[in-house]
Figure (tube, rainbow, N blue to C red):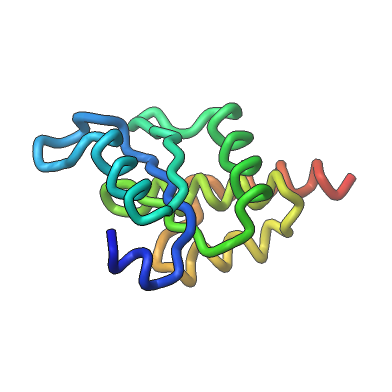
Length: 125
């Protein structure tokens, strides 16, 4: 956690549900470690079923309120990257910009591209 703090991270968003795997600490452990380093902590656990509208809105709200350097994580990073993209589209970023950022981070935007495009189009209307 001290290395994360040294990188300038001021907010951690945990996208893993507790007990997703045996080698994973529970969210409460991560939250306590973050608190010790004075890093804000939030949980939006995303299961294999994917992110729902409430999850997207929760992250959009968090991103609006915490403009500083943030760390979103899940097991591989995919759920976090896709949830981030959906939240960005909800906040009004263009679909092409959001999908390009997801791809630049090393993830495929395809699983959520249509949703991002719909959200971005809805915000532009």
